[in-house]
Amino acid sequence: MKQIFLVEDDKAIARNLIRLLRSEGYAVTHAPTRAQALAALGGNHFDLALVDISLPDGNGFTVCTEIKDAQDIPIIFLTASDDEGSVVTGLNLGADDYITKPFRPRELIARIGTALRRSVRPGSVFEIHGLQADTASGVVKKYGKEVYLSALEYRLLLVFINNPKSIITRDRLLDELWDAAGEFVNNNTLTVYIKRLREKIEDDPADPQIVLTVRGTGYRLGGCYVSE
Figure 1 (tube, one colour):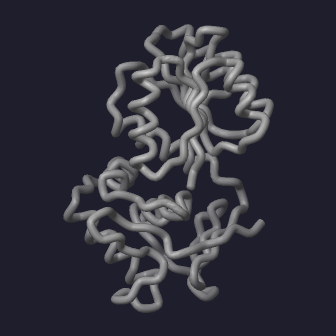
Figure 2: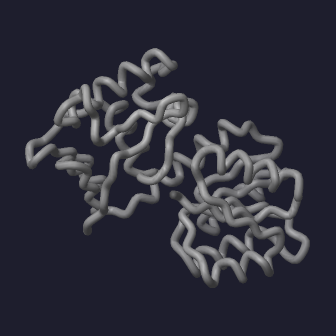
């Protein structure tokens, strides 16, 4: 399960964000101040940080620098300010994205997914029931033989690889895939792409072991591990 570090002092916003993120399968650690954020960094490893710029005991720019010094993870700034100076400052400090309040929940989830995909370690090879996916080269093999996936099929596979212990809802998959290859993806076409992906990577598409259906919820990965 991906670990999200939320640094936000507004109680109502934090509460809603925690509920949203957990509904998407993320674990969340919340710190309302810079001091508490620093304390949380000492004993936890996170996959991504959401950082508010305005904090009661400092600012998010300082927190961003401190997070980057402690852990090499993506950072997305959350702020009510949309002036160019703040945007440039945040990005120059190493932030991966910048979203202004109020924001649409689905847009935030999509941006989190994009940042997490970009943070996959170069050279990582994911192995799943005889399937190997090299995220550095983009090559996918099944029992040593290359499998040719379309852009959307490969992106769909990456969503599962990047969230190996999470149930991925159909809504989240639609958010992840909406701009892939410039094609429109709706519920019907998503079903088609899941079917096509299974036909290429499963031993028996009728009895999938890699992309599993969670009835009434979505899908999850059957199991994988990472090698260097």
